[in-house]
Image (cartoon, rainbow, N blue to C red; front, side, top):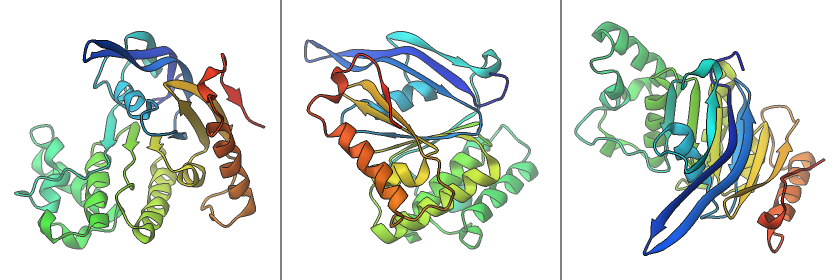
Amino acid sequence: MPEAGALEVVGLGRAYDAAGRRVVALERVDLALTAGSFTAVVGRSGCGKTTLLRLLAGLVEPSAGRIAYAGGRRPKVGCVFQEPRLMPWLTVAGNVGFGLVGRLAKAEAAARVAAALDLVGLAAFAEARPDALSGGMAQRVAIARALVLEPELLLLDEPFAALDAFTRRALQGELTDIWLAGRPTVVFVTHDVEEAVLLGETVVELAAGRLVGRRPVDLAFPRDPTDPAVAAHRRAVLDRLMQPDPASRPEPETLP
């Protein structure tokens, strides 16, 4: 794995104690990501998607297994969450550049912030406060805040879940454009199967903490949700996840 952003997950597991009992959030997950790839992780609520993302981000340590990074070093990571989590006392530019304070010279940091805001279409709102933004604009700020760090690994945890359908579709297209332009390695968590198929080069399916399927989606971008090929991929993923106990299989299934 010579390229930054590539990683391999081997036998990954995460368990914790809750109310006196042992809870297994993730177990025996094997996954390889090539540099510059876009992987969508889909599954029901509580299946371990966010736990996997937190492990990849280094926010928690695994209980079992390991994560091997290209070159033996953890890549530069950018994270986008379901809620924008903007600081209301800072401007849009201040929020985007917060992670650069003390790390870069002011001029260089300002240039990066301007470039990130231009990329997400918010250059004109650099001096606005978060309370003046719509939900979609606030999420664009959150994406810019992650991009300004120039991440090699971009992790997104259901970033569009709280948005209306029109804004969501627009931001899906913008995210695809951003990824194609810069080619960070992307892991995108969602419970929306159609969204996973529209965005991912590969769709990884989780159920009850286990990886139960991988599906390459070999379709050109941008993808149209009315395309029969998109619908066929969506149906196949749903069929897999709707089985009574998809996590009972000893090995993950790669669908044709």
